[in-house]
Length: 266
Image 1 (cartoon, rainbow, N blue to C red):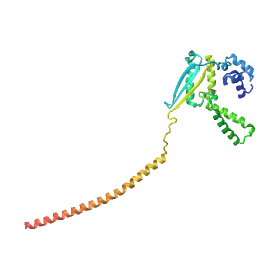
Image 2 (cartoon, one colour):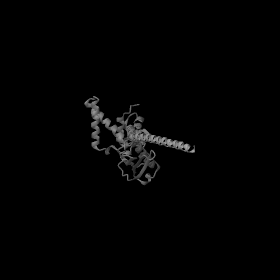
Image 3 (cartoon, rainbow, N blue to C red):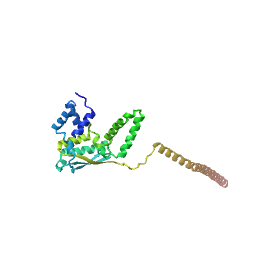
Image 4 (cartoon, helix red, strand yellow):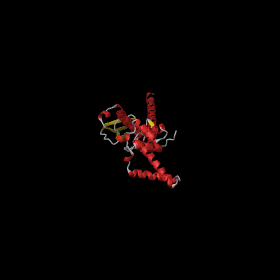
């Protein structure tokens, strides 16, 4: 069996409009022969996906998905051609799957065409600097950078991300499968991902610093209380001494009174 390369799959995919995994399987089934693989896709009804992409898809559904006990929420709009397909189980399941995927994978864009050129240029510059730093020759640097850019697209663009339930498939492959099932153009138009508390500046507390502050406050409180405690102790001592003196005096007076009384009786 001929070795099936990524370039062969890409070429067949561009010509047929079929999903990546379908193209790979077609090539495997036909020993790498692109013409035979194209015929195989046509017989399976998989080669018309690209043609359907040009048809207007104005129906569909807006779906929602809540994850992690209400910590993450997603809203997604998926379009198709007719209300009949939009109400079908396959379409509704696809909408839910997309919502779940967005919650888990956190893409930034639906497809690479939406990524601003300025952002792409910035990433390309960073990747090129990395490649040059690694000592790669200038003549192959651009090819390496192109590969890194494509990998970056697969991380930030929804349709190019590996599907969370089956990483061997992309989200685009999942969409292509639905197109084949329904016979209609299906497009993921947009999504919004909400994370509880995102964008709100939270107070960051350092436990060590907090403990140090509490210790310092306690020490200052003890220092402030020390003079009062000393004054109270001195006062207590003086009070006890005065009380003892008064008691002794009273005892002496009582004793003297008894002696006088005794003399009178005699």
